[in-house]
Image 1 (cartoon, rainbow, N blue to C red):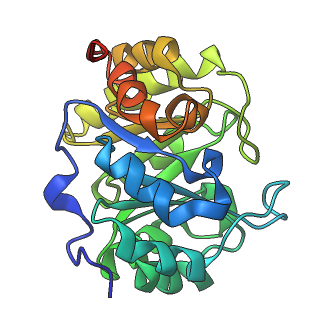
Image 2: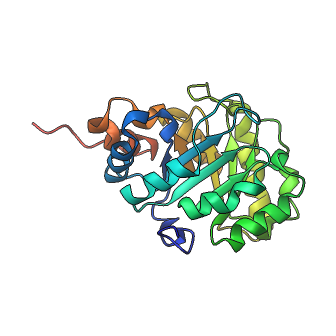
Length: 240
C-alpha cells in the first residue's frame, strides 16, 4: 500500500501555497534523483501526469513507474489521469502510491461514482477542468471532491503558454466552493505556471500550483529558488 494511507492529507496544507513540481519536465533518465531533489528543495507534492495517447495526444507513464518512484520521497503523489476510461486503473495507481487521484469528467460516464471509488480506495479525489470544461459540472458533487484542478493549457504536452481566460474559471470555482461551505477546497492550476502567472492564479483563488519548466529549469541547484519564487517569496541571497 502507499506510504500515506490517509491519502497524504496530513501535509496537504503544509504551506500557504502548495507547489507540485511536474515530473513531465524532469530528466526521465534520473526520475528517482529528480524526485528526491525537488522534495529536498521544498516541494509539497510530486505531480505525475499520466497520458494514454488516446484521451490526450501523448503517452507518458503507468502504475509501475509510480510504484518505482514511491520509495524515493515521502511527499504526496498528485496523480493526474489523462486517460479514458479511467475507472479500470484507479486501484492500480492507488496501490502504486497515488495519494491524490484526479480525473477528467470526459473520461468516464459517471463522474460521481468515480470520485466515490477514489475515496473508497483511501486517496483524495480530484476533478480536472480542461479549458472548455464548464465549472457547473461539479455543482452538485462538492461533498465528494477534495481537489479542483484547472488546466490553463490544453492537456497533453508541457511547455505551452498560460491561458489567461482560465483565471475567471478559478474565481468561479473558488466562489462555488465557498458557497457550498467548502472553504477547505483545494484549487490547483496546471499549465504555463511561472513566477508571474502563479501570482495571478493565487489572486484568483488557487492554493496549489503545478509547475514543470519553472521548477526544473537550471538543474537541482536551482530548484529551491525556483520553488520559492513560485510561492511569491524572495529567493535567498547567493552565498558569498
